[in-house]
Image (cartoon, rainbow, N blue to C red):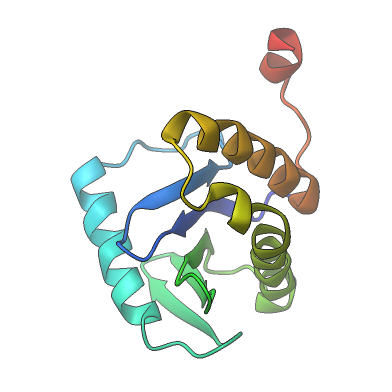
Length: 143
């Protein structure tokens, strides 16, 4: 499924703990400072969300879908093309959030960075499975 540009899972301090990107041909590189400011702004918008409430923000030709996890205050943000149907995106957003809460939340809390990294890599693989991404030829060569 090639509808998600990227997914960011942001902690209560606004730090991205998981960054999952769908590398597309012709994708432009974004300035890290601009991305940081964008994520800070989106996190502020998401701050008022209640349990399972989803906020959608249109910026340019993109939509940003946000949902907050109440127990830990993590925010989940999906970036997609503006013409994509919300009926396809919202179930994916909820499923990624539920996967994170059920399987990874306890594994990532209060762990050293090195230990978190292996769980984050596993989470990214699970997200790929949810989104039905196929491994690229380069990924297959690396394995």
